Length: 112
Image 1 (tube, rainbow, N blue to C red):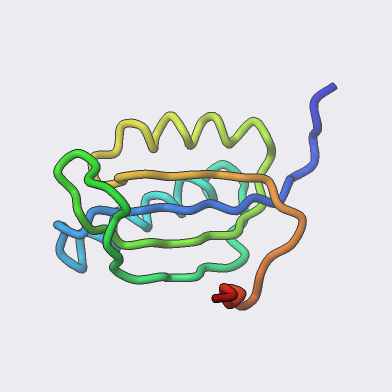
Image 2: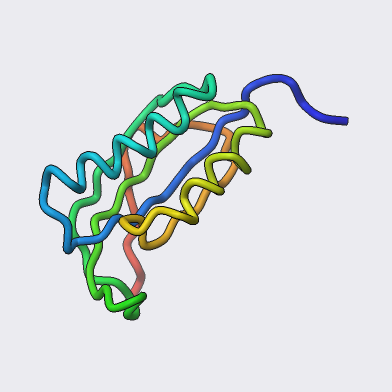
C-alpha cells in the first residue's frame, strides 16, 4: 500500500567547500527547487557552515553542511536522489523520515 500523503523528511547535505559563495548558494538552491518543484515544502533550514570532513571524499577535505526539514510525497524522494547522484557539487547527502522539525539543534554533553 502506498501513501498518498506528504511525509516529513530530514535531509543532510554536504556541498563542496571549493565552490565560491555564489556557486555554493546556487548548488543549494538547486536542492530546494528539486523539492519544491515536485510539490514538496521546505519547513526549516539549519546552516551548519564549513566543517572538516571525517575522511577525504573525492579530494574534498572540507564541506558546507546543511540540515533541511521538508515535506514531500514518498515517491518524490527517489526522483530527487537521482538528481543528487549526478551533482558534482554535492559531496554527500542523507534523507531520513522524521516525526518532528527541530527548531534548534542541541547536542548533549559527553560525560568525561
